[in-house]
Amino acid sequence: MRVVLTGGGTGGHIYPALAVAKEISRQQPQAAFLYIGSKKGLEAQLVPRTDIPFQSVEIAGLKRKLTFDNVKTLWKFIQAVSLSKRMLREFRPDVVIGTGGYVCGPVVYAAARLGIPTVIHEQNVVPGLTNKFLARYVDRVAVSFEESLSFFPAGKTVLTGNPRATEVMHGDPRAGRAFLGVGEDKRVVLIFGGSRGARAINEATLAIVPRMQEFPRTHFVYVTGDVHYDSISAALKEKGEQPRNLSVYPFVHNMPDLLAAAHLMVGRAGASSLAELTALGVPSILVPSPYVTNNHQEKNARGLEKQGASIVILENELSGERLLESLSAILGSEERWAAMQKSSRQLGMPDAATKIYQVLGELKR
Ligand SMILES: CC(=O)N[C@H]1[C@@H](OP(=O)(O)OP(=O)(O)OC[C@H]2O[C@@H](n3ccc(=O)[nH]c3=O)[C@H](O)[C@@H]2O)O[C@H](CO)[C@@H](O)[C@@H]1O
Image (cartoon, rainbow, N blue to C red; front, top):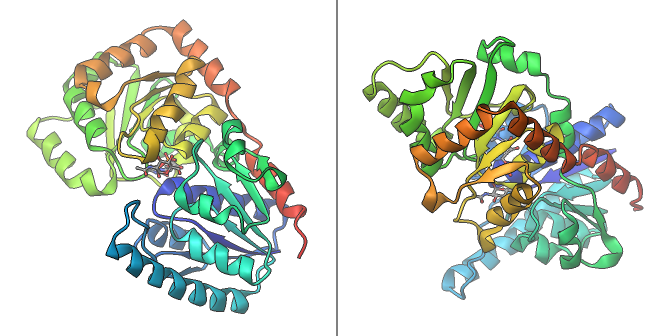
């Protein structure tokens, strides 16, 4: 099978595409891939770390308001469609899979015009602009939540879950612990603000650093996000000696292993992160980003909270104190943690990638 993957901007769109590629490779070791992304997106850094070739098209996001910028965006879109067509004719894929983000638009649209079978995957409950636009041209829409089915044409939409859920099931907790240098006697608390880091979570975490030694059985893994790393490192230096039970990283590339080793996660409520947590049954403290379309992260987070899998703290209520309180509530009670773990796992859809693979099998050229 020859497969073109496209999707980008943030990790929440890129990792699901890579997870589908992993599943296809597991089922068909001879499969060939090409990833088409944008040079400006995180995909330009993440995809070259895999063995999937990467090509780029230039594209910009549509503004929701009518502006002159949108005329330029439209022009870029037309150019990107024509470049995508050239790339697709050359690669001759059997299927094109889009996982959201602006760059998907021209690539999937071009594929549909060329008569190449197309599938898009939506990670969030409320679909993004690009997937809404593409829905009418594609052969299949795979969604992560039942509530999303109503946003897409009934005949071609399937509930699959998020393929990252399947990928993290292959994570190796021992490899995760070995990477951190942490033994089985310590509980790992993983703190990260989505794929780009989040200032509010970083500030609250910084505030609790001096109190971390109050949790001697716990190891804190603090992933700041690439752009925040230097300022956080400087702030930590200013605080003096760093607690022994804390490791700090700008970004981690082995999240499946770390999540498999995690006792608790503190972070944003991006859809891919939540699919990962629930597949593994990891309890969480979620601070949904208020800066996303339709406040969709709060909707994602409330779903987990309702089932008892998470504690939700809104960003405007977040402080070091509040974070510490929630951490103590979970880390201080085995029963509470076990109940959250069970609820989290009940929400998981660990066979998502396999379901998407089945969808690919139904497509005819
Ligand atoms: C600000 C913004 O627009 N956020 C959106 C974006 O988030 P974002 O990309 O932050 O969201 P997600 O939490 O969904 O995904 C992050 C992904 O990056 C991985 N990861 C993260 C940090 C790290 O150091 N290493 C690493 O591998 C996580 O394991 C996960 O697979 O896409 C999501 C899925 O469409 C949306 O739900 C989010 O609302």
